[in-house]
Length: 95
Image (cartoon, rainbow, N blue to C red; front, side, top):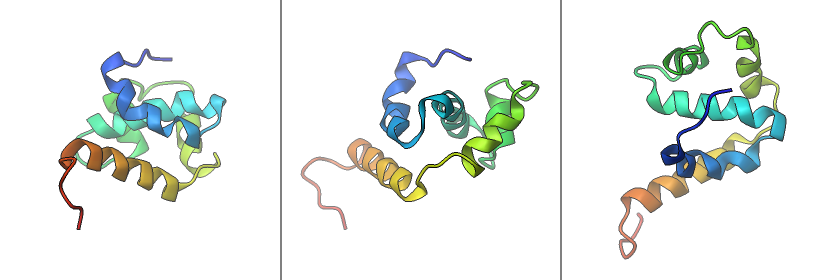
């Protein structure tokens, strides 16, 4: 597995509760790849930008999204919270 840069940990750690321990290793790579990938945010694009397009465990990354039990609604709430915390001043109303 790749080593995740410490600077990126605050971005991906809020999502750790969504995935089991075995799936989390794959999910981290997909999350970072989705952030870094230009154009469409596909599993293939995420793996390519992370340098893993020829990984022998390629199919396991696809399984993160279609077989692993995780909640997209919970993930979207986490993402919204991160975006608000980053871009909205503390005293500003959210409309």
